[in-house]
Image (cartoon, rainbow, N blue to C red; front, top):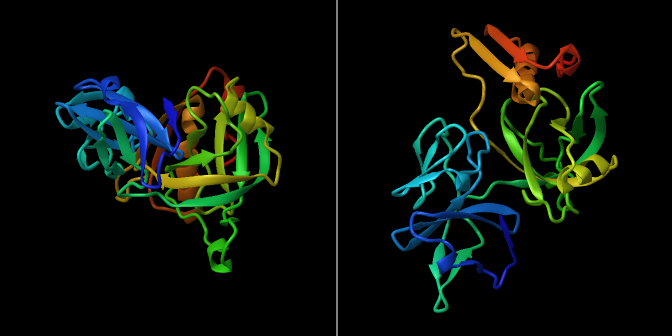
Length: 282
């Protein structure tokens, strides 16, 4: 993924026209936003590159006509509008205005037609889960960004199972970029925001593991439709493995706290009993 700096207030150069041949795609990053640039029969389009269903990388998917298909769960989006053309995704992608200048530079207007809200949270606690390489990061639920007092009182509203993008700052030369998305593993019923992840030897994860309590991070979202169904007369069956349990932790905690009249059956696969995450925490 290529990081881009702004050339003007409205448009930025993201690539040369020759860099993206017909029926090809390329992911770029503009002002912290991951964007998929597409060439359809010599005309260029741009939509968000992170699938709104579960965060899959659209630029790694397939392009057929005006439809891009997510490589994770096969959601499809119209590259002209960002609208969903095939589920499981139900939320559209942001769509960006694109033009090609006289030097065959592809330019994208920096403000998309749909923009996720961004708030600032404070790291409250880091909790390394014993016997694993997983650490949970707990943040304030209240917006700690400077400004009017009423803005600071804004709480992040989300649905159990959704994900968000976390900009922790100070990340350089990470092949996946300086911003990552994580499932929110806390429940909306809890008084903090939490995500849990394996700590690896990447620039982002190294920076993440070194964060001290009190550090402020930027969160954009929430997004995604991988959530508990609303027809409680039907049971829910959860299948997970390892760190993939995070959205189910959020749903189970929410269902328990709200005493929802829904039957939930869960199958969780791990190497051994020591690697079972959250077994004593819901």
